[in-house]
Image (cartoon, rainbow, N blue to C red; front, side, top):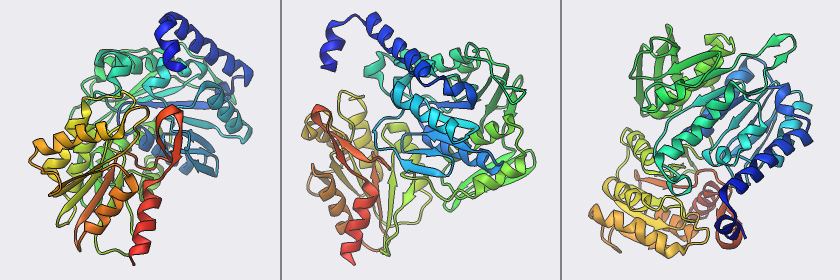
Length: 437
């Protein structure tokens, strides 16, 4: 039905429909976003992590926080996994959740804001006060038509910032603030939009005009990462240079909200892991197992930068790629990266939607073959994801590292006709490892 509508209904009417729904949903729930400080996080990678790190910083200051991300929801002390298989909820669901946050006395709402959500005007039902840009790499190109359109979709969030409802909460005027990753090539574009205050963060560039959060030094190690900001050393348990960027975004948000750097440091140093993001699964086995989301080439390469630091013998990598016409060009690239870095590659089903899983798997496997892997020798194609994971764990020897990517902490596999099969890579791994004891 959706495909029929997209094919025969003019695009401007579809846009009008989405816009009307966004406005109607906000009206129906009495504009809950106008009663809290609303923070939006957009970008290609790191959004969910940044959302959760921001929440930790705000909570350290004593605020009650609500959040929505790809893998979890939170209202105050209550949290639960995102089983919707949506980065950004539909308009009425999102407004209902925001209303609940307000009713539970949350002072902040932190919203992971996707380009698809922006494209459908879901962001216009919200009155943002602070927006964060993490980074931009090619993704959802089929949906947006081009990389430039994808960038512009993200830009709509920043464009709407200065036009959104100006809030005065408990006698305090809330400033419209933008926070941008200065090291990203698109940073000047996102900084071009109007805001009361602009912050930048990064590792490689020095800022001139804007309030900057640039470490004096930093290092990413196999046990975590360290950096120094304004003379204060942060020692994070989170792995990888990319998590330094994610932490800096949260630091910038904290400073913008007048939170002391010492409290920001305390909050971030307490974070041990985040669901499905470089998450180690430990069930007493004599080899390492990591679950990571990494659905596209840039995030996969960054993940391998961390893997390079970890002690291991062989790497066994289980991966697939998304269906439904989503970024088909990435499939062989993912396979090629895994084929180059891993000793054994097992290609399996991920989220096929209405495509044949075998076809997607073949495309990923071709990339691995291009890197020198040979089928049934060090390359295996297994459609059943549980069987693929089980094969990897059975092949693992003492000291090896097994990586399962593509889904992270997602709670379902999406197949044809809009069906969702309940799923969690981490639970499946734990079940298999428990039986192996």
